[in-house]
Amino acid sequence: MKKIFLTVLSIISLVSCKSDDAYENLNRDPKNPTQVDASFLFNSATKSLFDQMTSTSVNNNIYRMLGQHWTETTYVDEANYDFNTRNITDSHWSEMYRDVLLDLTTASENVNASPDLTQAEKDSRNAQIEVLMIYTWAQLVETFGDIPYSQALNAGEYVLPGYDDAATIYSDLLSRLTSVIPAISGTGFGSSDPIYSGNVGAWKKFANSLLLRMGLRVVDAPGMSTVAQSAITSAVSGGVFESNDDNASLAYASATPNTNPLWVSLVQSGRADFVAANTLVDFMNNLDDPRRAVYFDQNLGADTYEGGPYGENNSFSSYTHIRGYDDGAGLHDPTLPASLIDYAEVCFYLADAAERTISGTPAAAQGFYDDGITASFEYWGATDVDTYLANPDVDYTTAPGDWKEKIGNQFWLAMYNRGFEAWTAWRVYDTPTFNLPAVSGSPVPTRYTYPISEQNLNETNYNAGSSAIGGDSQTTKLFFDVN
Image (cartoon, rainbow, N blue to C red; front, side, top):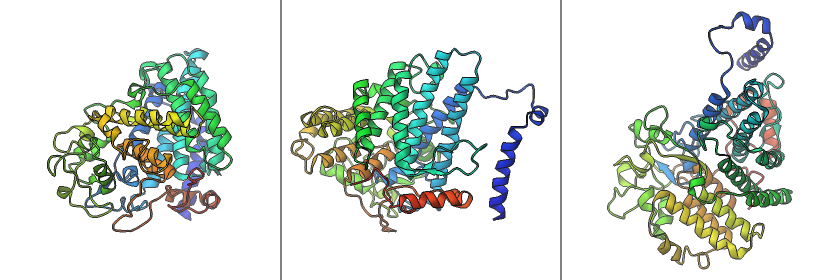
C-alpha cells in the first residue's frame, strides 16, 4: 500500500509543480529548449508505433505467436500464452499510451502554440496527428476492450483515469476519423513525415483504408451495424488503397538504432528463438502455396517445409526457419519496411463488404479476393499466382467453406509479418483452426489481459473495467468478436 501511495503522490506532486510557473522558471536553463519541436515528436511517435507493431521481442510483442505464424524454440512461455512473466501487456500498454499517444498529443499542443505556422498549416499537421491517434486508440480497444479514453492523457485532472466502454470508444473513433478525412490537406509535416512525406493524396487513402478496416471490424457488433456500414460506404467512396505503392509503410535504415526491430531480435541478438509454426506451414503445404519460398528458408532441403509443433520446445535445426536466416534477406533484412495497413488487407475488406452488399455485390467479391492474394504475392516477390488462384482449394468458387471462411483463410495467410492482423483475422473470421499450445494446452487468447500496473495502481477503475467486459480473462471475447 505504501508503494502505491508513494507512486500516486509522486504523480500528483509532479503535476502540481508543473503549474507553478515561478518555481519552474527558477529551474529553467536558458540555453536549452523547453519545448520539443512538434515535428520531432510526430516523427518519434510514428516510429514508436511502427516499432511496437512490428517488433518480435517477446518483451514487447507476441502477436506472431497469437496468430500462430511463428513458434518458439528454447523459451516457450509466450507461445503458451503466458502474458505476465515478462509483463508483455504492461509493455504494450505503456508503449502505446506513453510513447505514441502522449507524444502525439504533445505534438498537437505544440503545433497549435506555434506562432510560425498559419492556421492552414496547423490544420494540416493536426489532421495527420489525428489519423495516427485514431489508429492507436483503435488498436488498444481491439487488444484490451474497455480502456481509459475520455480521462486518459490528462494527469493534471485525472491521475487515475476511468475506463470507457469499448463500443462507445470505437463509435467515437469512427466519428472522429470520418470528420478529419476532409480536413486532410496541405503537406502536413512535409519531409518530417516518415510515412508519406506529406503527400496529401496518400494520407487520404490511408485514412479511408483505416476507416474501411474499422467499419468492417465492428459491422457485426451489437448496435453498430448502421454506423459501421456508413463508415464502410464513406471509405470506399472517398478512395482506399489501389496498389502496394499506397501501403502505410515506414522505411528502416541499415544501422542501429533505426533498423527494423525484427533485425534486432533475429540477427543482432545472435539468438535462434523462432521457427515457423506448424499451424501456418501445414496449411500452406496443403495448398502448395508458392509463398513458402519467400516466407521461409529451405534449410531442410529444396521445397521442403516443416513447421515446429506450436508451443513445443522445438529444436531450431529440425524445423523450417524464418526467411533470411542464412543470407540476411527477407525478415532478416535490417531495412525491411514495416506496414500499419497494406493493399492486400484492404482487398480482403472489400471482398467482405461486397459479400454484405455494402460496397458492390457478392459477385464482385471474387475479384477483390483475387486482388488480395495477388497483392500479397507481389509484395513478397512470390511467383506463379495464376496457378495458385486456379487451385480448387483456393479458387473462390470452389474453395471449401462459406465466404467468411474463404476470405478469412487467405486474409490470415496474407498477413504474414503482420502478427496483430493475422490474430485479429482469426478472431473475426474464426478460421483457420488453430492448435492448442503443446506445453500449456491453454485456449487461444481473444484479448490481452490488463497490465499488472493497472491492477496495482488503478485498482478501482481496473475492477470496474474488468467487470464491464465480463472478466479480465485472456479468453473474454471483445464486443466485435461475435462469431
